[in-house]
Image (tube, rainbow, N blue to C red):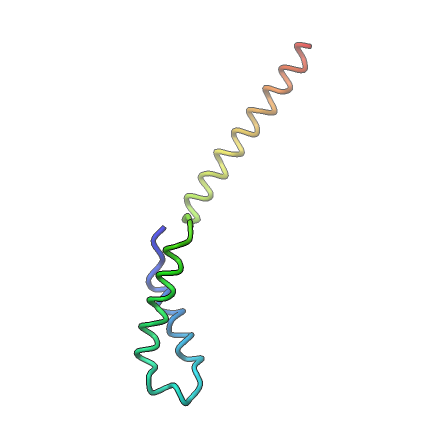
Length: 78
């Protein structure tokens, strides 16, 4: 999954805003570094989009339903 760049920008900006006053002079450089660190960290994670997750949830639900039907059918044949 590719990270949402607007969300990363917002998060990097929030981290920069949280810096103490003594570091505000390097805030633009810090924001760039925060964003790079966030992108690198997220790239290492095995993430999926909400849409992919919901699709897999539906597939699993159908598989569970089919399994329950097959188990019921098997029990009725015993």
